[in-house]
Length: 376
Image 1 (cartoon, rainbow, N blue to C red):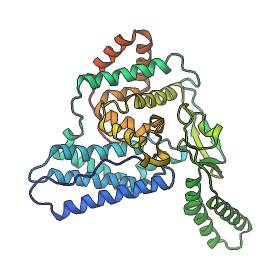
Image 2: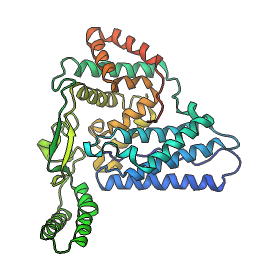
Image 3: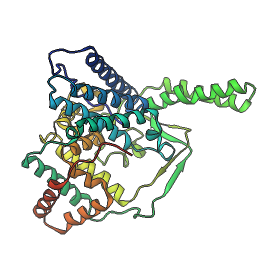
């Protein structure tokens, strides 16, 4: 789930001589929706509301379209607004969902509206705004070096489940942070049982389930815990939850009777996640991605609270969000997310010296162009 990050500033001034009513309304709507999403993420340990996330993307796209119609359009602001919309949608599509949740994004009515807006934006000439600017050679070399370093660290002998042998696991209970458990019981489980009881008021089984759920909710509401202040220095989520019974943000984990099915992943899935995380941590604060640097500074600051760390801020970074930010600037990083490309890169990194591998990857990345933000 997503963690809270310090937001990018909403543009204050607008191109053109007059700030018209529609622009004012769109700016206020984007700010209101983003603030609501940040507040919810902080309150329930990064939980996302699908409809709310799509509403933010829709509002950002409408704002970008309106900015294009201004008397003197400022291209940097249009680019920033449209890229934020594309990035948010991409992160939503790449969330680690259970088998039951796959397809929820595309099935949402909000997704259809967003898809139409992206197409309209591109047809009106906005496609160029979604392409990253040419990075400086120093920055590109740092990115290539981080990728090669991560591959040489993790890609030598991947062990686990080979391609073609992925498994689907199932469990009767789900482990989740305490705040998310309270949110689920209060807003989903208990209301569903109450609706069933309204239809069958004499059903003893439903009555027992409702009593048990209400008792569990009251117990969780009354729980207090001291957050684990120092992160365990191992790969995010690998052993932390099982061993410590705390989330990576230091929140107590509890078990909820919520059946779930999920895929095991393969060697290459594991390698992709490790490399992606390592690349983000290596590049944070290195002046190759302003948005990633801002989040890194936020994680180091006292105002980040439980979501940050003054000692090890890199281990508190939202690596999925950070990698999306990097990929916007360096489209060649999408090679890491393609299994065939990733396998080839791992062989390249291990089969050559470091400098030769960096130069080879740098040459590949210069040829890469950004993919369209959508559109299935």
